[in-house]
Image (cartoon, rainbow, N blue to C red):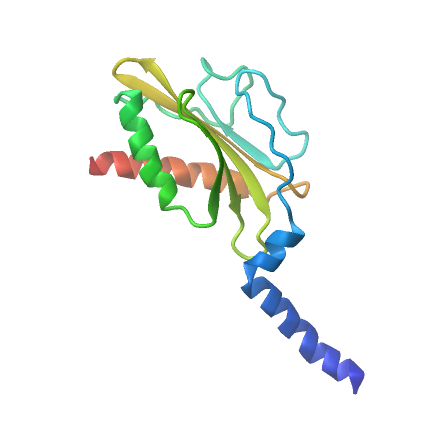
Length: 165
């Protein structure tokens, strides 16, 4: 009889834990997050990160190069704030508006794994700006493409928000 009870109780307990993300978030802490420097960093040695950056801005080879945007930096910042506000499970860890750099943690939907995302918005000249994004997992050796999908989704939402005007 105890075996049958365990077969019923264990899935219910797991479902309850996953339903209340706070439990999983407590079990998967973020830890101390140091300020990130796009000009001077080393890529993860595991396949659980994704870098979107223009070659003229990052020293390392990026996975993709985001486009140059035909708008001034202050407008890009305003549009970016709307984009990130629409993202679920995102917490801003740090913002340096003077540098145009923002650090976020976004947790995965089911298990609530925390992933760090650093975004840098920067001016190329008075009428053009660009974005760099580095998304990386805190836990695990692989991410099943989560960081890539996140960066591509955020860039797509940025393009859509810019198209709206």
